[in-house]
Image (cartoon, rainbow, N blue to C red; front, side, top):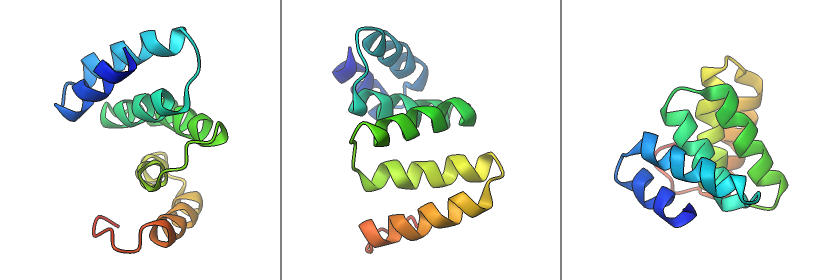
Length: 101
């Protein structure tokens, strides 16, 4: 389910990805699944839920510049500019060549 959710997300089937990842996470909390579901939730405009998943994924050890970058956009959507700026600085440190920042 986790793998299929990731594939669906890559194919822009965000609703299907979320459904698969919800089911995968019901079987146990995994950092990668939380990251993927957080990213899907962000695409769906569910920023508060996305932030919870992204924060939990990081707390469980998911270390990925895309997680920090995604959280920047979620925080901006929630109006938390201070945290977004701090995460943006961290994202640039982690991936200095990333043109999306």
